[in-house]
Length: 197
Image (cartoon, rainbow, N blue to C red; front, top):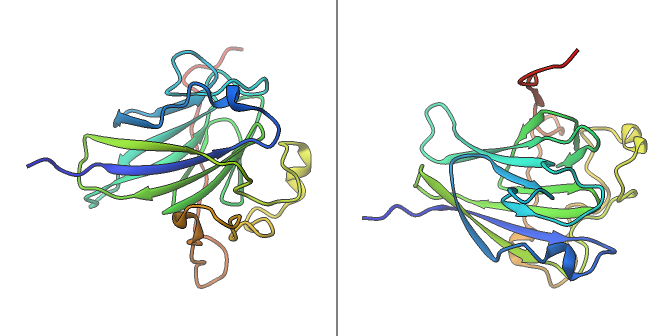
């Protein structure tokens, strides 16, 4: 009997660029349990044509939690020149954060919402990509600048829990805060594989 795959429903939006930005985005992508790369390189699994995007900008990394029976995912920043904003946290080069059931991500002007629907298969997962005609995330600055440093890391941007009217139903669910009010998320930093001096 075939085991159902975990499905990542991924919605994408960019405020200024046209359809060519997303020309290489498949509607459905089945992937093994290796990291799924996002960037402008030809070997990126999700290839986007953006001038400020690194060849490998970020990755979605599946893993099995200790004692777990379903795939969980980390989002890892791979760009040295840009940061990635995930659920109110700013990730820099090689920092990573575990993903929740619904995740709001921005990078290089792209707004991305990732909704994880768990399955029982541990060998592969599926990404279903949707292009949004209107914004998915609302926050004061859509660009990745040093001004991000002034935004408290645990504070979600204004209105981030409210998707635009008429969006897919899975965007309506908001993450539940922990008893202390701040999300229970910890950044993880890995050392680069090789460092040149």
